[in-house]
Amino acid sequence: MAISRSAFLKGASLTSLAGILAACSTGNSSSSTSGSSSSASAEAGAFPVTISTQYGDVKLEKAPTKIAVVNAWKNADVLLSFGVIPAGMPKTTWGQNSNDSTDWFDAKLKSLGKDLKDITRYTETDGPDYTALSQIAPDAIFAPYGMMSQEIFDKLSKIAPVIAAPKGDNSYDSSWQHVTEQAGKMLGRPAEAKKIIEDTEKMIKDAAAKYSNLAGATYVAGYFNVADGTLGAYNSKDSRPQFFNDLGMTMASYAKEAEAKDPSSTFLSFSSENLDKVNCDVLWAWVNDPAEIEQVKSNALLAKIPAVAKNATVFAQDKAQGLAMSAASPLSIEWLLKNSKLLEELSAAVKASKG
Image 1 (cartoon, helix red, strand yellow):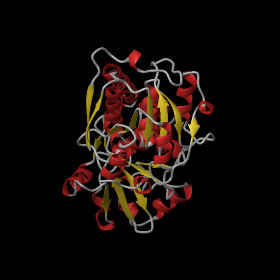
Image 2 (image 1 turned 90 degrees about the vertical axis):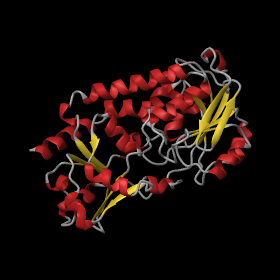
Image 3 (image 1 turned 135 degrees about the vertical axis):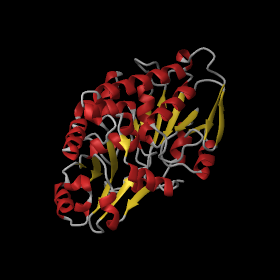
Image 4 (image 1 turned 180 degrees about the vertical axis):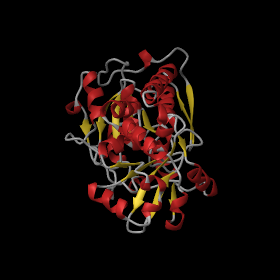
């Protein structure tokens, strides 16, 4: 089921994300030169390869040398983690830094000896820019994560083979691990993909180990609707719950039960009369500003939520951190763990919840 970008950011901002389009050329893991071939770094026997996607199998005879990216969330980050430097990509329009990019993308780009001036950047607000893609003339289009439909897939396929989400995933479902695996297959570097995943998972595990009370702690990740006095939450396939699970935490039983009753729903909704049943060790939830935090705390209906009553709520209002979690990638996860106090805040919330 396809969902809009604004719906994906439900509870965080009414600003819809720009459609994502980028083009890139491949290189090795330590450096990359525009126009260089990725075949030299492909693993032996990697091609030809048939890649399974949600909209059909895609066969590649050799490693692509010019890759266009549709939906930059996760996708562009993951390619950059392989040393693949975009030749073109749109400006980031939510959670962006002063460069209309992200700090983690810029830092990795700099480590590869490049900067944003080396990348052609464009804005796309209504889905893929088919004209721009045609002008790029890519060898492959990388789009495992984000907005996709059969119609979009078919249109893109007229330009180049499309590496969409793996079979079984839907729009915004693909974990950073799945996106990395798809990239590894496309680049002919599955062993490197495995190492990127293992290294990132170890980084998360090591960071979480510093806060022992996170292990097994229950959570709900969601957003408040102050006007209605309700709580919304993300299902287990969303990037935010996926990240908390990687930390060794577990989704609260009430949220699991709600998802089981409506497994096709992208968002879970908890009505005001049931908020006292939303028991969890920590509630992580979007707010737009400090004023909204006070509105939540003073709302008689939302005060029924045990985590709100016990000061066991992590109010997420930093958009850069929100983006790093909402579209988690190996690059954004490393940045989040090193540049935020999220784990410390989660641990403090768990402590407050358990008294």
